[in-house]
Image (cartoon, rainbow, N blue to C red; front, side, top):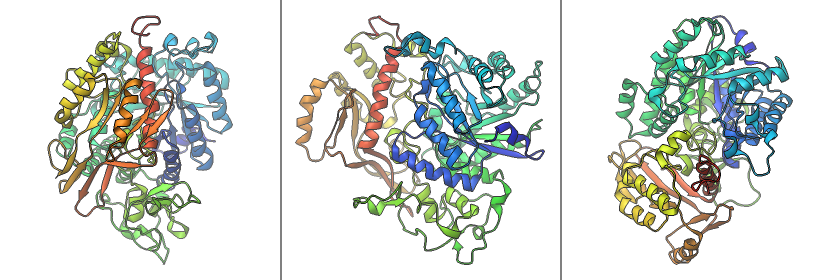
Length: 625
């Protein structure tokens, strides 16, 4: 039950520390697998504290509190719960704070959330007095409220933006000086520490921190300022996150990543080096407080584990030798190599008899009484990545988190996530930030992009313009289309002409080289394969005609659901890998999988995005209705 600031102040002068951030997974199995991952990371890495995110408008409230309880009570990790305060039930703010106190959580990251829009977000039958926007417009309102209701019980953090906050999604208008008065206000209202938005431009961060430390108000003279860092998991995720957060990627970093963007493993290796260099740069900066680092893990462990070891941030007790006489050396990792000065193989040993199966397996919470058809590809959580008995030294657990040996490969099996069509059993499955359904653009930007459609033809035109490359994004895909989509643009336009609005698709690929400029991915010495698929919205009447036709084709698999949650599938138990690759010296890599559990999860979000889009329009207008 420790406050973050108390733990920071208890560190030796000049010491460094780090924290890790997690979001509640979208599926039950992802949640179970994250629990296992958290236990391993807690033992291997020993963060000073962990953060648990909170979805926009309280959309993940229950799951966020459940994850916070696991961290705080089960794992004994000092936990900081994110809390937003706009566009949700007023009661939820009080309930979250009370539940946090009940769980023994002493730390809150006070955030505003999306801009207040009471008319759009008020639920049917909700009383005006239960609208959180009545009392909370800015994060400072939440800071003041927590201090008024709970005094000094909670240690309160607030967000800071080294490159400026872009509320209107116009990066060119960003300037940290614009936000400075608000940050002063939040700090003077009772904030105990600052945690920054992610960044890659260290020069921008240097200027920002200097500006705060030297500010005439004195508000930031000694307050902990914790920089937020994002381990680079893939080229695609980096581009998406930098766009959403408006974080500038310096030209030299961009050039290094562009040179390897076709190889996921090389991207991750370069990313580890880039983040390690950023950390080492910040370690060299003078600071009136102990220097900390906050990592946005995206629920993944391999890259962050390497960065922490590279920069010697892992607390020293992890470096003790394992003297177990019955252990042998671990197989070195095949991709990310241990840094200079890191633990040697003799310090990372495991029993040769524990889980030496040659294939990657999915971690399940507990074995079922019935025989699973995938039993050879599954492993109970207490056997995968968490070896039993004397093998569970912290040094060995660190090696597993870094992906070394068969245990490491099993523990980091989802190391290359692929959004909503990745493996639904992965803790990283779904949205990249756990923020919940959102348009990822401000209301003014959304209106500029999509205008004021009033009928189906207007909406069809937006989808058609997106396929033709004239529209940067649609509510379900904020980025432009990938180059491979142009190869099936004619077919997609034909579907949209029928009023079947496509939101995701891919063409068939049969054994092209992994270096192919359009379809290639992964290491350069491989072959890649794809099954064609298309995801689209269509009228219920059209579905009634289409389904019988699909059922006449044995080679076609389909999943379908409406806004009410009614679900149909050609084979509900089917698991459909639609992208895979074969590479020298590696197991088959399958980054894209479509199955019932992932489709159901995505459907909830897909229909929610329709509602989010509707909410940007004024009530009782032709577009709103």
